[in-house]
Picture 1: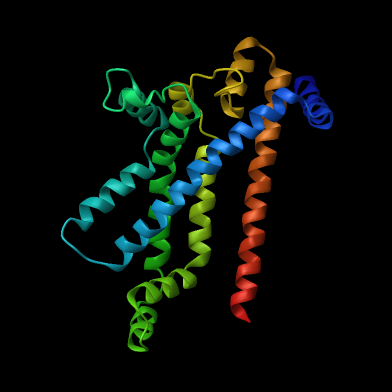
Picture 2: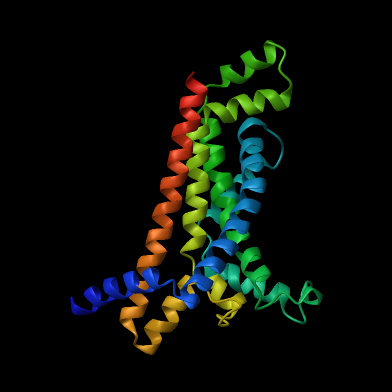
Length: 235
């Protein structure tokens, strides 16, 4: 109990003092996960919508692969990205290994199936008559799809939140491809692992509290935006 109390006190102290090391770790964590989530959203939402709205040969296979990706162990992603970016790998010339770019690539691979799979489920939950009605009223395919996404907006927002939650708290893949280099690739999760191994449990708890706080703030912000969007569309 004493360790937890000290952890709370140290977390508040680090935040109140604006500890430079903590701020650098927080900035990098948010930067890496934010860029990864942006790419995952750009890829995942159209992919999920496409799989939900269109039937074509091989669709079941792609969905099966998508479901597999949703449960893909992060360490497997880390190994895959490591081999791709190693000197002898096909992308070795990029020299991304142990850089934030490698961490972003790994997080995109982790988050995209989550965003796409949950978006697909949300779009499939919308009454098909909505799309047919939009098309019969003269909407283009893109406009009809936008109408479906607007009807499924709650599920789509949940997919983005799930994607963010899946990568901000991820440690295995970013540790493997980022290397946990101080000042360059050390993020909150890898810093927590490092301090725990050092036996500095109070600091590890402090970093954990900061991570939980950031996750809560991000989710609360998204829910707030979702509420505003619902209110605007219901007018």
